[in-house]
Length: 253
Image 1 (tube, helix red, strand yellow):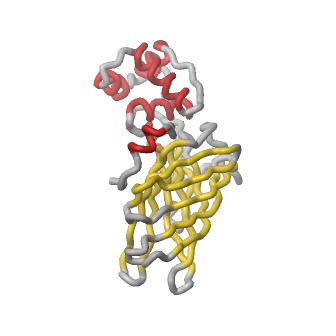
Image 2 (spheres, helix red, strand yellow; image 1 turned 135 degrees about the horizontal axis):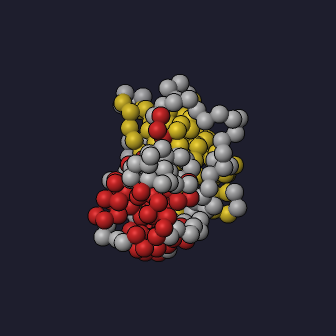
């Protein structure tokens, strides 16, 4: 016996969209993301009736884009998604979303993400400990990612840093659902770190929806000690046109 997905239906109705309109919105979201899908009114009906318990990763990403909500909150009985989460031992693993901190997905190499292109505007967020201030801090930037084959070029947008005038750059490589590369941040000359240039390495895992990357950075401190901490990127907009760039050229909230 199937259980109707009343949550998804309520979300759709709150958006004042018919099932046909909802399917169209999903199709357009897939096109914008460079991941074409063919949703229909019938598919939406089957989701809402519970005949289909969980969407495929490509459709899950479109659902998140259209509703603005994580797939886990859209009422599916057994989401086929996974999330990147801390493993309790200083690292990150891919976990089934329905099991919180369950055992990692088995296999030596994480499965490839369905998202074909990661270009767009993302919110970068990392955590670090300041020995001089004896406290932990968060650094945030809106960044634009441009993809060329399996290479990602990441550059922070103008005036888009939680630490003013501290531009961030990253050069990354995609291998399935694994992101590996380097980062550089030039701190502000009038800030706490007085224009110091910090750099290091980074490795992250991509969630199956292709809208979040999470992992760890490694770098050195002012005392030449090696430090590490969590770092994540969350997709804000798949567009990189001038209007979108202007929208996110501001301090992250």
